[in-house]
Image (cartoon, rainbow, N blue to C red; front, side, top):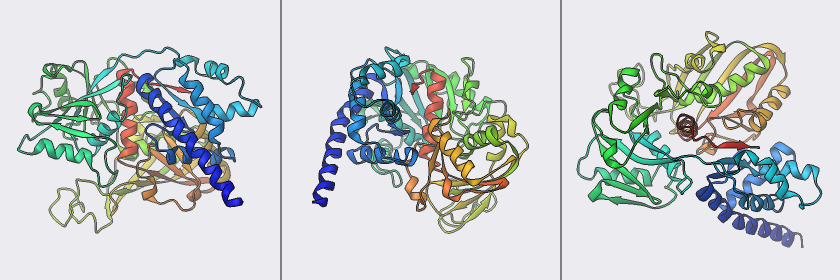
Length: 474
Protein backbone atom coordinates (compact mmCIF):
# COMPACT_ATOMS: atom_id res chain seq x y z
CA UNK A 1 0.00 0.00 0.00
CA UNK A 2 2.84 2.38 0.88
CA UNK A 3 4.58 1.66 -2.45
CA UNK A 4 1.36 2.44 -4.35
CA UNK A 5 1.05 5.75 -2.47
CA UNK A 6 4.54 6.88 -3.49
CA UNK A 7 3.98 5.83 -7.09
CA UNK A 8 0.67 7.68 -7.23
CA UNK A 9 2.31 10.83 -5.82
CA UNK A 10 5.09 10.62 -8.40
CA UNK A 11 2.57 10.14 -11.20
CA UNK A 12 0.67 13.24 -10.11
CA UNK A 13 3.83 15.37 -9.99
CA UNK A 14 5.01 14.07 -13.34
CA UNK A 15 1.69 14.83 -15.05
CA UNK A 16 1.59 18.35 -13.60
CA UNK A 17 5.16 18.96 -14.82
CA UNK A 18 4.15 17.72 -18.28
CA UNK A 19 1.15 20.07 -18.27
CA UNK A 20 3.41 22.93 -17.20
CA UNK A 21 5.91 22.52 -20.06
CA UNK A 22 3.82 23.88 -22.98
CA UNK A 23 2.73 26.86 -20.88
CA UNK A 24 6.34 27.65 -20.01
CA UNK A 25 7.36 27.39 -23.66
CA UNK A 26 4.61 29.65 -24.93
CA UNK A 27 5.25 32.21 -22.20
CA UNK A 28 8.83 32.58 -23.34
CA UNK A 29 8.40 32.34 -27.11
CA UNK A 30 5.36 34.61 -27.33
CA UNK A 31 5.84 36.98 -24.38
CA UNK A 32 9.49 36.82 -23.42
CA UNK A 33 8.63 35.59 -19.91
CA UNK A 34 11.18 33.32 -18.24
CA UNK A 35 9.74 31.33 -15.33
CA UNK A 36 11.88 30.33 -12.35
CA UNK A 37 11.53 28.33 -9.15
CA UNK A 38 13.66 29.94 -6.43
CA UNK A 39 16.20 31.11 -9.00
CA UNK A 40 16.17 27.89 -11.06
CA UNK A 41 15.16 28.71 -14.67
CA UNK A 42 12.53 26.41 -16.18
CA UNK A 43 13.22 27.46 -19.77
CA UNK A 44 13.49 24.26 -21.85
CA UNK A 45 13.40 22.22 -18.62
CA UNK A 46 12.47 18.54 -18.69
CA UNK A 47 9.72 17.14 -16.47
CA UNK A 48 12.42 15.81 -14.15
CA UNK A 49 14.10 19.23 -14.02
CA UNK A 50 10.79 20.87 -13.09
CA UNK A 51 10.14 18.32 -10.36
CA UNK A 52 13.65 18.67 -8.93
CA UNK A 53 13.38 22.47 -8.90
CA UNK A 54 10.28 22.20 -6.73
CA UNK A 55 12.04 19.87 -4.32
CA UNK A 56 14.98 22.27 -3.99
CA UNK A 57 12.65 24.83 -2.39
CA UNK A 58 12.97 22.77 0.78
CA UNK A 59 16.54 23.94 1.32
CA UNK A 60 15.26 27.51 1.59
CA UNK A 61 11.86 27.11 3.21
CA UNK A 62 12.16 23.88 5.19
CA UNK A 63 9.51 22.18 3.05
CA UNK A 64 9.30 21.37 -0.65
CA UNK A 65 6.93 23.22 -2.94
CA UNK A 66 4.29 20.88 -4.39
CA UNK A 67 3.53 21.15 -8.10
CA UNK A 68 -0.19 21.19 -7.33
CA UNK A 69 0.45 24.40 -5.37
CA UNK A 70 2.54 26.11 -8.05
CA UNK A 71 0.68 25.01 -11.19
CA UNK A 72 -2.27 27.43 -10.68
CA UNK A 73 0.21 30.31 -10.67
CA UNK A 74 1.69 29.24 -14.01
CA UNK A 75 -1.86 29.07 -15.39
CA UNK A 76 -2.68 32.52 -14.00
CA UNK A 77 0.55 33.90 -15.50
CA UNK A 78 -0.37 32.49 -18.91
CA UNK A 79 -3.65 34.44 -18.78
CA UNK A 80 -1.90 37.77 -18.16
CA UNK A 81 -0.26 39.94 -20.80
CA UNK A 82 3.03 39.97 -18.93
CA UNK A 83 6.01 40.59 -21.21
CA UNK A 84 9.79 40.55 -20.97
CA UNK A 85 10.11 39.44 -17.36
CA UNK A 86 11.81 36.84 -15.18
CA UNK A 87 9.05 35.59 -12.89
CA UNK A 88 9.85 33.43 -9.89
CA UNK A 89 6.69 31.36 -9.58
CA UNK A 90 8.12 29.53 -6.58
CA UNK A 91 8.50 32.67 -4.49
CA UNK A 92 5.08 33.96 -5.56
CA UNK A 93 3.38 30.65 -4.69
CA UNK A 94 5.08 30.25 -1.30
CA UNK A 95 4.26 33.83 -0.34
CA UNK A 96 0.62 33.40 -1.40
CA UNK A 97 0.02 30.15 0.50
CA UNK A 98 1.49 31.65 3.65
CA UNK A 99 -1.38 34.12 3.71
CA UNK A 100 -4.24 32.25 2.01
CA UNK A 101 -6.08 29.01 2.59
CA UNK A 102 -7.56 28.63 -0.89
CA UNK A 103 -6.80 29.69 -4.46
CA UNK A 104 -9.79 31.93 -5.12
CA UNK A 105 -7.67 35.11 -5.25
CA UNK A 106 -4.68 33.85 -7.28
CA UNK A 107 -5.54 35.81 -10.46
CA UNK A 108 -5.90 39.10 -8.60
CA UNK A 109 -2.75 38.41 -6.59
CA UNK A 110 -0.73 37.68 -9.74
CA UNK A 111 -2.02 40.77 -11.54
CA UNK A 112 -0.94 42.90 -8.59
CA UNK A 113 2.47 41.29 -8.17
CA UNK A 114 3.29 41.37 -11.89
CA UNK A 115 1.95 44.85 -12.67
CA UNK A 116 5.40 46.28 -13.62
CA UNK A 117 5.64 43.83 -16.54
CA UNK A 118 2.11 44.10 -17.92
CA UNK A 119 2.07 45.12 -21.60
CA UNK A 120 5.82 45.86 -21.55
CA UNK A 121 7.31 46.28 -25.04
CA UNK A 122 11.00 46.05 -26.02
CA UNK A 123 12.52 46.56 -29.46
CA UNK A 124 14.66 43.57 -30.57
CA UNK A 125 18.36 44.19 -31.19
CA UNK A 126 20.98 42.50 -33.38
CA UNK A 127 23.93 40.57 -31.91
CA UNK A 128 27.13 39.43 -33.64
CA UNK A 129 29.58 36.96 -32.09
CA UNK A 130 33.14 37.79 -33.16
CA UNK A 131 35.02 34.57 -32.49
CA UNK A 132 33.47 31.15 -31.99
CA UNK A 133 35.50 29.40 -29.31
CA UNK A 134 34.33 28.09 -25.94
CA UNK A 135 32.54 31.25 -24.79
CA UNK A 136 31.31 32.15 -28.29
CA UNK A 137 29.59 28.80 -28.76
CA UNK A 138 28.02 28.86 -25.29
CA UNK A 139 26.70 32.38 -25.92
CA UNK A 140 25.28 31.08 -29.19
CA UNK A 141 23.49 28.30 -27.32
CA UNK A 142 22.08 30.77 -24.79
CA UNK A 143 20.87 33.12 -27.52
CA UNK A 144 19.38 30.31 -29.61
CA UNK A 145 17.52 28.71 -26.69
CA UNK A 146 15.55 31.96 -26.47
CA UNK A 147 14.36 31.71 -30.08
CA UNK A 148 10.88 33.13 -30.51
CA UNK A 149 8.97 36.17 -31.71
CA UNK A 150 9.53 37.87 -28.36
CA UNK A 151 13.31 37.37 -28.35
CA UNK A 152 14.96 40.73 -27.73
CA UNK A 153 18.55 39.74 -28.57
CA UNK A 154 18.75 38.14 -31.98
CA UNK A 155 21.90 36.35 -33.04
CA UNK A 156 22.47 37.41 -36.63
CA UNK A 157 26.06 36.39 -37.38
CA UNK A 158 29.31 34.88 -36.21
CA UNK A 159 32.66 36.13 -37.50
CA UNK A 160 35.69 33.82 -37.70
CA UNK A 161 38.99 33.55 -39.47
CA UNK A 162 39.54 30.88 -42.09
CA UNK A 163 37.10 29.92 -44.78
CA UNK A 164 38.94 26.76 -45.82
CA UNK A 165 37.09 23.76 -47.23
CA UNK A 166 34.90 22.12 -44.61
CA UNK A 167 35.17 25.04 -42.18
CA UNK A 168 31.43 25.73 -42.06
CA UNK A 169 30.58 22.10 -41.34
CA UNK A 170 33.18 21.93 -38.56
CA UNK A 171 31.85 25.12 -36.95
CA UNK A 172 28.34 23.66 -37.02
CA UNK A 173 29.59 20.37 -35.60
CA UNK A 174 31.30 22.13 -32.67
CA UNK A 175 28.03 23.91 -31.91
CA UNK A 176 26.11 20.63 -32.21
CA UNK A 177 28.35 18.56 -29.89
CA UNK A 178 30.21 19.61 -26.77
CA UNK A 179 32.37 17.26 -24.68
CA UNK A 180 31.55 19.12 -21.46
CA UNK A 181 28.11 20.66 -21.92
CA UNK A 182 26.57 17.89 -23.99
CA UNK A 183 24.64 17.93 -27.25
CA UNK A 184 22.88 21.02 -28.56
CA UNK A 185 19.22 21.06 -27.59
CA UNK A 186 17.62 21.15 -31.02
CA UNK A 187 18.47 20.86 -34.69
CA UNK A 188 21.31 22.43 -36.65
CA UNK A 189 21.49 22.68 -40.43
CA UNK A 190 24.21 24.02 -42.71
CA UNK A 191 23.39 26.28 -45.65
CA UNK A 192 26.67 25.91 -47.55
CA UNK A 193 25.51 28.01 -50.51
CA UNK A 194 24.90 31.08 -48.34
CA UNK A 195 27.55 30.42 -45.68
CA UNK A 196 25.04 30.12 -42.86
CA UNK A 197 24.04 27.90 -39.96
CA UNK A 198 20.37 27.44 -39.14
CA UNK A 199 19.84 26.45 -35.50
CA UNK A 200 16.31 25.94 -34.16
CA UNK A 201 15.03 28.30 -36.85
CA UNK A 202 17.64 30.98 -36.16
CA UNK A 203 19.47 31.98 -39.35
CA UNK A 204 23.10 32.72 -38.45
CA UNK A 205 25.33 34.23 -41.11
CA UNK A 206 28.91 32.96 -40.96
CA UNK A 207 31.32 35.72 -41.99
CA UNK A 208 35.02 35.26 -42.61
CA UNK A 209 37.31 38.18 -41.74
CA UNK A 210 40.84 38.73 -40.44
CA UNK A 211 40.26 42.09 -38.78
CA UNK A 212 37.33 43.70 -36.92
CA UNK A 213 37.18 46.64 -39.35
CA UNK A 214 36.82 44.52 -42.50
CA UNK A 215 33.11 43.68 -42.33
CA UNK A 216 30.10 45.51 -43.74
CA UNK A 217 27.33 44.05 -41.60
CA UNK A 218 24.61 46.07 -43.28
CA UNK A 219 24.90 43.95 -46.42
CA UNK A 220 23.60 41.06 -44.29
CA UNK A 221 20.67 43.07 -42.94
CA UNK A 222 22.45 43.73 -39.63
CA UNK A 223 22.33 47.21 -38.12
CA UNK A 224 23.05 48.92 -34.78
CA UNK A 225 24.54 45.61 -33.66
CA UNK A 226 26.30 44.67 -30.47
CA UNK A 227 29.50 42.83 -31.37
CA UNK A 228 30.64 40.44 -28.64
CA UNK A 229 34.37 39.88 -29.09
CA UNK A 230 35.29 36.43 -27.78
CA UNK A 231 38.74 36.22 -29.35
CA UNK A 232 40.76 37.87 -26.57
CA UNK A 233 43.10 39.27 -29.23
CA UNK A 234 42.09 42.91 -28.81
CA UNK A 235 41.77 44.16 -25.23
CA UNK A 236 42.31 47.92 -25.41
CA UNK A 237 40.31 50.80 -26.80
CA UNK A 238 42.41 51.06 -29.93
CA UNK A 239 42.02 47.40 -30.86
CA UNK A 240 38.38 46.96 -29.88
CA UNK A 241 37.60 50.31 -31.51
CA UNK A 242 38.29 48.66 -34.88
CA UNK A 243 34.87 47.00 -34.59
CA UNK A 244 33.18 50.40 -34.57
CA UNK A 245 34.70 51.16 -37.98
CA UNK A 246 32.61 48.40 -39.55
CA UNK A 247 29.21 49.42 -40.91
CA UNK A 248 26.27 48.26 -38.80
CA UNK A 249 28.11 48.16 -35.44
CA UNK A 250 26.99 50.31 -32.52
CA UNK A 251 28.47 48.68 -29.40
CA UNK A 252 31.31 46.28 -28.53
CA UNK A 253 31.58 43.93 -25.55
CA UNK A 254 34.78 42.05 -24.68
CA UNK A 255 34.48 38.69 -22.89
CA UNK A 256 37.78 39.12 -21.05
CA UNK A 257 39.32 41.75 -18.77
CA UNK A 258 39.99 44.97 -20.66
CA UNK A 259 43.04 47.18 -20.50
CA UNK A 260 43.15 50.93 -19.97
CA UNK A 261 40.07 52.93 -19.04
CA UNK A 262 37.49 50.53 -20.47
CA UNK A 263 34.87 49.70 -17.84
CA UNK A 264 34.98 46.10 -16.57
CA UNK A 265 31.37 45.22 -15.75
CA UNK A 266 30.32 42.54 -13.27
CA UNK A 267 26.56 42.32 -13.56
CA UNK A 268 24.79 42.83 -10.26
CA UNK A 269 27.72 44.80 -8.84
CA UNK A 270 28.50 47.75 -11.11
CA UNK A 271 26.24 47.45 -14.15
CA UNK A 272 24.70 50.78 -13.12
CA UNK A 273 27.91 52.32 -14.55
CA UNK A 274 26.80 51.50 -18.09
CA UNK A 275 25.68 54.60 -19.98
CA UNK A 276 24.37 55.16 -23.50
CA UNK A 277 27.69 56.82 -24.33
CA UNK A 278 29.68 53.65 -23.59
CA UNK A 279 30.51 52.05 -26.94
CA UNK A 280 33.18 49.64 -25.68
CA UNK A 281 32.80 47.60 -22.49
CA UNK A 282 34.25 44.48 -20.88
CA UNK A 283 32.46 41.68 -19.03
CA UNK A 284 35.63 41.05 -16.98
CA UNK A 285 36.77 37.45 -16.33
CA UNK A 286 35.01 34.34 -15.11
CA UNK A 287 36.87 34.50 -11.79
CA UNK A 288 36.12 38.18 -11.26
CA UNK A 289 32.43 37.48 -11.88
CA UNK A 290 32.49 34.56 -9.45
CA UNK A 291 34.11 36.34 -6.51
CA UNK A 292 33.06 40.00 -6.77
CA UNK A 293 29.35 39.53 -5.94
CA UNK A 294 30.20 37.44 -2.85
CA UNK A 295 32.89 39.89 -1.78
CA UNK A 296 30.52 42.82 -2.18
CA UNK A 297 27.84 41.10 -0.11
CA UNK A 298 30.30 40.23 2.67
CA UNK A 299 31.85 43.73 2.59
CA UNK A 300 28.44 45.42 2.90
CA UNK A 301 27.47 43.22 5.84
CA UNK A 302 30.69 42.59 7.80
CA UNK A 303 33.35 44.81 6.23
CA UNK A 304 36.66 43.50 4.83
CA UNK A 305 40.05 44.74 6.05
CA UNK A 306 42.13 42.52 3.78
CA UNK A 307 42.10 39.14 2.14
CA UNK A 308 43.66 36.61 -0.20
CA UNK A 309 41.88 34.81 -3.04
CA UNK A 310 43.27 31.50 -4.28
CA UNK A 311 41.72 30.20 -7.47
CA UNK A 312 41.67 26.48 -8.20
CA UNK A 313 40.95 26.75 -11.90
CA UNK A 314 40.32 24.18 -14.60
CA UNK A 315 42.87 24.17 -17.40
CA UNK A 316 42.16 26.37 -20.40
CA UNK A 317 42.90 26.36 -24.11
CA UNK A 318 46.02 28.52 -23.74
CA UNK A 319 47.82 25.66 -21.96
CA UNK A 320 49.51 22.73 -23.67
CA UNK A 321 48.15 19.19 -23.84
CA UNK A 322 51.72 17.87 -23.62
CA UNK A 323 54.92 19.59 -22.54
CA UNK A 324 55.87 22.20 -25.11
CA UNK A 325 57.08 25.76 -25.41
CA UNK A 326 54.84 28.43 -23.89
CA UNK A 327 55.74 32.08 -23.40
CA UNK A 328 54.28 32.07 -19.86
CA UNK A 329 56.03 30.44 -16.92
CA UNK A 330 54.92 26.86 -16.12
CA UNK A 331 52.01 26.93 -18.61
CA UNK A 332 54.09 24.98 -21.12
CA UNK A 333 53.75 21.86 -18.98
CA UNK A 334 51.04 19.33 -19.77
CA UNK A 335 47.69 20.66 -18.53
CA UNK A 336 45.91 17.27 -18.13
CA UNK A 337 48.80 15.88 -16.05
CA UNK A 338 49.84 18.70 -13.73
CA UNK A 339 48.71 21.19 -11.17
CA UNK A 340 50.23 24.44 -12.40
CA UNK A 341 50.78 27.49 -10.24
CA UNK A 342 50.16 30.65 -12.21
CA UNK A 343 49.11 34.23 -11.72
CA UNK A 344 45.64 35.75 -11.80
CA UNK A 345 44.60 39.36 -12.14
CA UNK A 346 41.20 38.66 -10.59
CA UNK A 347 42.03 40.08 -7.16
CA UNK A 348 43.12 43.38 -8.68
CA UNK A 349 40.25 43.29 -11.19
CA UNK A 350 37.75 43.18 -8.33
CA UNK A 351 38.66 46.77 -7.48
CA UNK A 352 37.67 47.90 -10.99
CA UNK A 353 34.15 46.66 -10.40
CA UNK A 354 34.06 47.32 -6.65
CA UNK A 355 36.54 50.12 -5.75
CA UNK A 356 35.89 49.71 -2.00
CA UNK A 357 38.26 46.72 -2.07
CA UNK A 358 41.11 48.45 -3.91
CA UNK A 359 44.44 47.43 -2.40
CA UNK A 360 42.84 45.04 0.09
CA UNK A 361 43.15 41.75 -1.81
CA UNK A 362 45.94 39.55 -3.12
CA UNK A 363 45.47 36.58 -5.40
CA UNK A 364 47.05 33.57 -7.04
CA UNK A 365 45.87 30.64 -9.11
CA UNK A 366 46.43 26.92 -9.51
CA UNK A 367 45.42 25.36 -12.82
CA UNK A 368 44.28 21.77 -12.24
CA UNK A 369 43.62 18.77 -14.53
CA UNK A 370 39.85 19.20 -14.88
CA UNK A 371 38.20 20.60 -18.04
CA UNK A 372 35.58 22.82 -16.41
CA UNK A 373 34.25 24.17 -13.08
CA UNK A 374 36.63 26.02 -10.80
CA UNK A 375 36.74 27.17 -7.20
CA UNK A 376 37.77 30.38 -5.46
CA UNK A 377 38.95 30.14 -1.85
CA UNK A 378 38.65 33.52 -0.15
CA UNK A 379 40.54 34.04 3.10
CA UNK A 380 39.10 37.27 4.51
CA UNK A 381 39.90 39.45 7.51
CA UNK A 382 36.60 41.08 8.49
CA UNK A 383 35.88 44.40 10.14
CA UNK A 384 33.61 42.73 12.66
CA UNK A 385 33.44 39.32 14.27
CA UNK A 386 30.75 36.82 13.33
CA UNK A 387 29.99 33.11 13.45
CA UNK A 388 29.86 30.37 10.84
CA UNK A 389 26.09 30.08 11.32
CA UNK A 390 25.53 33.83 10.91
CA UNK A 391 27.76 34.00 7.83
CA UNK A 392 26.05 31.06 6.13
CA UNK A 393 22.57 32.30 6.95
CA UNK A 394 23.46 35.71 5.52
CA UNK A 395 24.82 34.17 2.30
CA UNK A 396 21.77 31.91 2.02
CA UNK A 397 19.47 34.93 2.35
CA UNK A 398 21.60 36.88 -0.15
CA UNK A 399 21.29 34.09 -2.72
CA UNK A 400 17.53 33.99 -2.30
CA UNK A 401 16.29 37.53 -1.71
CA UNK A 402 18.95 40.18 -2.40
CA UNK A 403 19.78 42.18 -5.53
CA UNK A 404 22.55 39.62 -6.08
CA UNK A 405 20.19 36.65 -6.33
CA UNK A 406 21.07 36.18 -10.02
CA UNK A 407 24.79 36.16 -9.23
CA UNK A 408 25.08 34.07 -6.07
CA UNK A 409 23.85 30.53 -5.59
CA UNK A 410 24.11 28.57 -2.35
CA UNK A 411 24.48 24.90 -1.56
CA UNK A 412 24.30 23.05 1.73
CA UNK A 413 25.16 19.66 0.21
CA UNK A 414 27.86 17.64 1.93
CA UNK A 415 28.46 15.57 -1.19
CA UNK A 416 28.72 18.15 -4.00
CA UNK A 417 31.76 18.01 -6.30
CA UNK A 418 32.84 19.99 -9.34
CA UNK A 419 31.09 17.94 -12.03
CA UNK A 420 27.76 18.46 -10.27
CA UNK A 421 27.98 22.14 -11.18
CA UNK A 422 28.61 21.85 -14.92
CA UNK A 423 25.91 23.98 -16.54
CA UNK A 424 25.19 26.15 -13.50
CA UNK A 425 23.73 29.47 -14.61
CA UNK A 426 25.14 31.32 -11.60
CA UNK A 427 28.60 32.90 -11.77
CA UNK A 428 29.32 31.72 -8.22
CA UNK A 429 27.96 29.06 -5.84
CA UNK A 430 28.75 29.34 -2.13
CA UNK A 431 29.65 25.97 -0.59
CA UNK A 432 28.27 26.55 2.90
CA UNK A 433 29.50 23.24 4.29
CA UNK A 434 33.10 24.36 3.69
CA UNK A 435 32.71 27.78 5.33
CA UNK A 436 35.17 28.50 8.14
CA UNK A 437 34.71 31.41 10.55
CA UNK A 438 36.89 32.31 13.51
CA UNK A 439 35.62 35.59 14.94
CA UNK A 440 36.85 38.24 12.45
CA UNK A 441 38.43 35.75 10.02
CA UNK A 442 36.41 33.89 7.41
CA UNK A 443 37.31 31.40 4.71
CA UNK A 444 34.68 31.07 1.97
CA UNK A 445 34.62 28.49 -0.82
CA UNK A 446 32.89 29.53 -4.04
CA UNK A 447 32.41 27.14 -6.96
CA UNK A 448 31.89 28.43 -10.50
CA UNK A 449 31.33 27.00 -13.95
CA UNK A 450 34.00 29.12 -15.56
CA UNK A 451 32.42 28.59 -18.98
CA UNK A 452 28.63 28.44 -18.73
CA UNK A 453 28.09 30.43 -15.53
CA UNK A 454 30.32 33.18 -16.90
CA UNK A 455 28.47 33.13 -20.24
CA UNK A 456 25.19 33.70 -18.38
CA UNK A 457 26.75 36.78 -16.74
CA UNK A 458 27.84 38.02 -20.17
CA UNK A 459 24.25 37.65 -21.36
CA UNK A 460 23.07 39.89 -18.51
CA UNK A 461 25.62 42.55 -19.48
CA UNK A 462 24.54 42.31 -23.12
CA UNK A 463 20.95 42.99 -22.06
CA UNK A 464 22.03 46.04 -20.07
CA UNK A 465 24.07 47.46 -22.96
CA UNK A 466 21.20 47.04 -25.43
CA UNK A 467 18.62 48.21 -22.85
CA UNK A 468 16.54 45.05 -23.24
CA UNK A 469 16.73 43.91 -19.62
CA UNK A 470 13.85 41.82 -18.32
CA UNK A 471 12.17 42.99 -15.13
CA UNK A 472 12.71 40.53 -12.23
CA UNK A 473 9.60 39.68 -10.21
CA UNK A 474 8.88 39.48 -7.38
